[in-house]
Structures are given as structure tokens and as C-alpha cells.
Image (cartoon, rainbow, N blue to C red; front, side):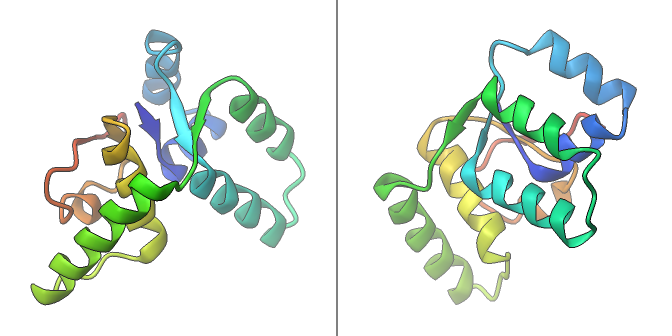
Length: 127
């Protein structure tokens, strides 16, 4: 289960449904280096020092997937296919989706409308 940036943000802000799912699925949680970058950027942009230690702790205790060669190939195939159909998804989100797909993982995101545009991506919301 790959945690998207928004799911981790909901957890940090105390969402009960997300916290419950974190506990229930604690041995299956993962995320990506792309999500880590988004979280660090967002916190630094807002000069928010409160959540950075929690983000670091989360990423020390879950599996973290990289954007590797397999993910990159899926990204290229998806982006070309979607572009031909006029479907636009931000590159970082498409990278996250590609990493999830390359590793046979479900993406956990509240952004279902956005990620549902990616064919064959298994996506769920905990919010």
C-alpha cells in the first residue's frame, strides 16, 4: 500500500479514519521518494517545523520505493498513451502511480478523481 502525499498529510493532521487504517495496515505501508520530496517541499515552503520530524519518522518506518527503471518505463508508456487521449495528469503524480504499478501496490490517495484517470492503477481512499 503506497501512501500518497495527501494521505500522509491527513494522518499528520489527525484524521481518525486515516490513523485507524495506518494501525490496521502498519506492516504493509509504503510510500515513494516522490511523496517524500512533496512533503518536505510543502513543509519547507510553509516554514512548518512541526510536522517534519513526524514525516522523517514515518519514512524511517515504512518501505520507500524509488523511481527506478521499471517505474520509468511504465511512466513513459502511460504518459504517451494518456497524451494521445488528451488526458493530463501532473508528472509527479504520474510518477507516483508508475512506482505503485511497478511494485504491484495499491495507491492510497484521497485524490480519486485525479488518479482514476490512470488506467490499471489500483487506488483507494482512507478519508
